[in-house]
Length: 289
Image 1 (cartoon, one colour):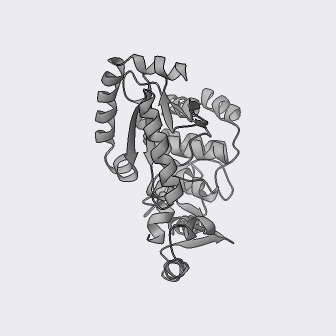
Image 2: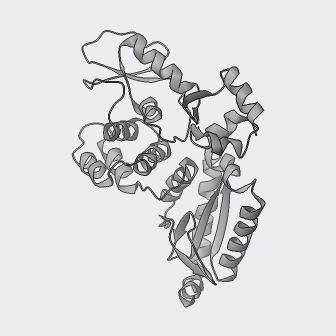
């Protein structure tokens, strides 16, 4: 796999051991030499946009914000930013050519973590903002502090801050799962939670998204996580088969579908809600195991 695609699918940051599972050492070295990926620290790589943001912040004497701040914090994000996000003081007269220029009085290299999450919630599409928030919680941001800050947010986008903070969870394994959950949360009648435990014969499984009332399981199938390990692939097949056998409605979506075809995913899930409502026995079967 191309190292750039691998780093992007991993959320824009990757450890060397993760990359070596999908790319040769030679391909990684060539991508580094050509500047298509960059080394963030020993054994960690990221996309060049993080370096470009740091250069832009220095040029403008500004602070990394939004997605650029999320990159600085080492969080996985759903999409690589098209331009650096830079914040400067409100009284600064600055030409923001080539950057997303915002204004705040916060100083330093990057906006602090909770502020970064809320900034993204105000300005980004719901799915991308949720991916940032999930990543922040996985990397140690306190969910109570995030929800408290969102509750006190005021001004444009404050309701979006509260929604993102309330829906965020550290249980989402990666931005792909976050983006899929964001789509599912928009589907009328669908009430999903991440990583709900389901007891199958001899093993407890935790699907990506579960609606227990409708008996629906939704899986995000990134190639990096399911496509290259034969043993993992075999276990996944067994799990999906057993879930169907025991009454669950199971659907699986790939990386490109979730990221590039959200309308398709939404339509499928909307239809699946109707199927789930017409099969109430799915819940009874689940409870029997």
